Image (cartoon, rainbow, N blue to C red; front, side, top):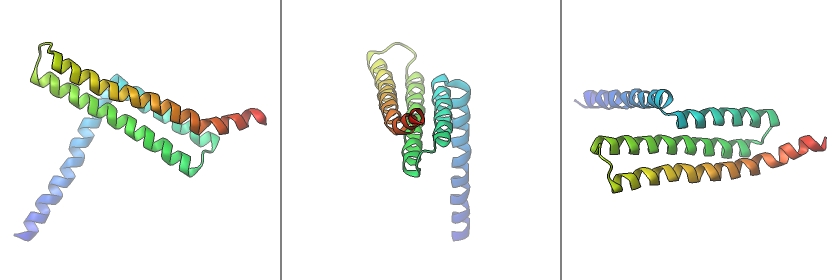
Length: 129
């Protein structure tokens, strides 16, 4: 009995990866903002590798990119849930959508500031050479 319970948990665990990959594919196919942030993150990581950012700076950069992508995914989830609940324009539904979009926007602004701080020194060194 215990063996079957462990197998059942393993199957549920493995299925969670399937569901997550389906969600990721949905974001790639249907959410232009997610795709934009993913591509921007890719470009920024390439620039960081070319400029030789330190391991600590790379960790900060990857953390910021991960949070940005996660916020965009959460925003999509909130919006789709609200769309499921009501098709009509409702002031509270609008507030929920606007606030979740604002969370993405606020972190995008913070991300740009962090990016400038991380890249300022390496870029300045390029111009001093």
